[in-house]
Length: 236
Image 1: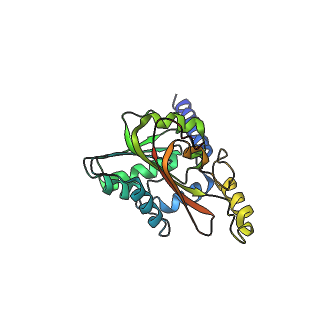
Image 2: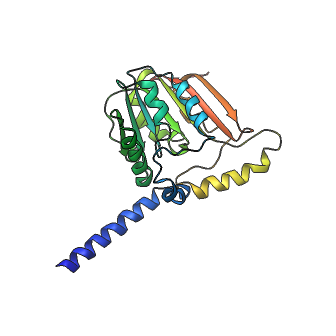
Image 3: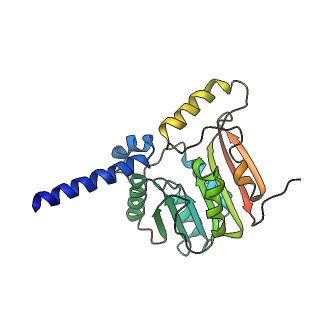
């Protein structure tokens, strides 16, 4: 009997491990063991970008914000500060490895108003309405009409939507790194991650007013923001 139990547990472990690998980007798997003891770890160069993204959300104390593709929760500190103790932060993450780190971050900081949902963004069970939607380095999300169709019903009219990611640079000499960056994105990210585009914001922009895009890092990165409204935008 004990042997059968050990065998079943081993099989279950292997299956879970396989699922985690399939839904966890390669770069996350490589960094996981290094950052596990440091729940608040984040790359120094990316913190200002996260803070800017939060400021573009225009959150107020008591607001609810959705962080889809939250990863290890790098944006949580600025989001929690923005909504205050009466607000709510919900992170959605497909990778069990990243979600576990995000929950570790929440526990270490004793945040009572932060929840991490382990799910595909298209299948996440969300409740209530949100005043803001953040999609930070989540091209699978902001570039998918199907996923956005699942998320937008959970946004209040007038909610702010902000997303950050990589793009093809059209600037002088930008072509020098376009191919290398696209290769790195497709090899180090999930199999479903789309290749780089010149305007990867075009899908999400259809639902946004006051839409603005700012390019950075010589045109290889961008941060976009707008205000949600229920009817698709018509620029004609």
